[in-house]
Length: 208
Image: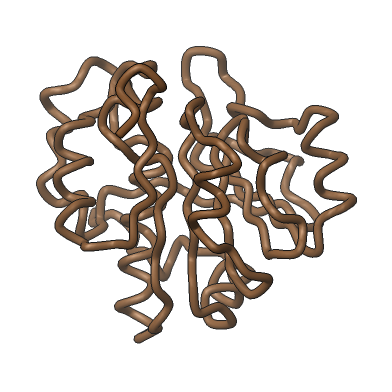
């Protein structure tokens, strides 16, 4: 049986947000992101911002924008990374203009309600066609950020949307080396070929 497509797994709320925006900004879970990088991105109120898992950089982001929180299900701990939300995210949600939460993979059971939505994971995405799944350790796969890039690109093509994409902190030597089980080299090369606007972020000792 063929894996589901991007359109078949995307919640209606996500499709609506993508149709309403002209710019998507993805913020990596990179500990070296600073306020300077955020200012460099020139985020405006009509941007759609994606933060991932524990959303560690959330407090640096502007409140007057549309925010999406994406939390990946962790098989080892049998729970979602960063969800349920801790106090700092709950406070941000109260102050921000608009927020939406998406739970990636796993079994949401009775969790799904209100502005919390479930996104199943599928390998049937264009950017995942050559992903080296078989070369990874057990339970390995695409990182949360790269999976969402792949999903957004397929949705953009399927719906013929024209939003631009900006990346903050998706940089070699940034935060990605902390996490085990993803094909980082493949992800960096595949992302580079998309020619997105990129705000590079490096550790202080190798800042450029």
